[in-house]
Image (tube, one colour):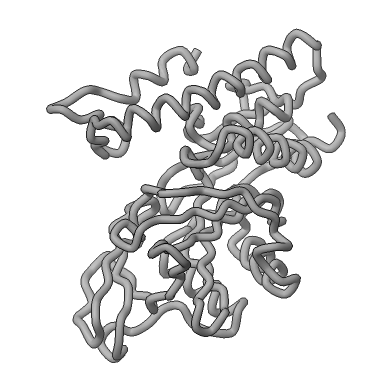
Length: 310
């Protein structure tokens, strides 16, 4: 039923599209309309996959979400449908029970479940920037966080909150602000005046898919990609780096989600700067063919890890 009403999550207000849950406002523009068109093109493919599964009578695992449910723009939505999973309301009857909450720190109380149900992300209850940096330092052996009062040079101030996209560059030393965290500025600039994030998708603690997300320097902290390319993990990372990424995912108990990895062009080191267990995707700027390939790849990983008997 909820799939018929997800349009109600939005409201037109004063020339913008208001996201009711978060309060975020999306300016109405030609670029926004183009993004909407690109998203709907992929959405209809995902719907066709889902219909095909039903017509073929595919034996599907059931999946329930708690405390919230994903809308179609979340990455898990097309993946679970391609994998053949069926959403049900009752967590006590589901084969897979998925903890789904956009909040930075969550109350991961396990709802009623049946024996043998696969629990996803219930061990991951803190994705604050400080938590990410602390765990990363312990795994990598080098620091991301800095003390703004003593650090000399460029650094990044950002909110602790998930998906705030409010980073700004400061020159230290500087006074710390409540609710903010401070990190070294990673020089991830590439040719063409762009910066590159290596968004790494995680399933069951394993790195599965990688997107090269590129933005202008002016929008480096925004979710506004100039270009997104699908790449292989082996092409982007060494075996040691893949192990670092997977060790980090396991340390924060991330069963499903996305990690933002930056490579510093001076030192060559990688830094994990963010984790998202309710990531949206596939990225709008990714070519449709790459959207379809990456979704099928993630769906195979989803089925293998979370529903191996189906």
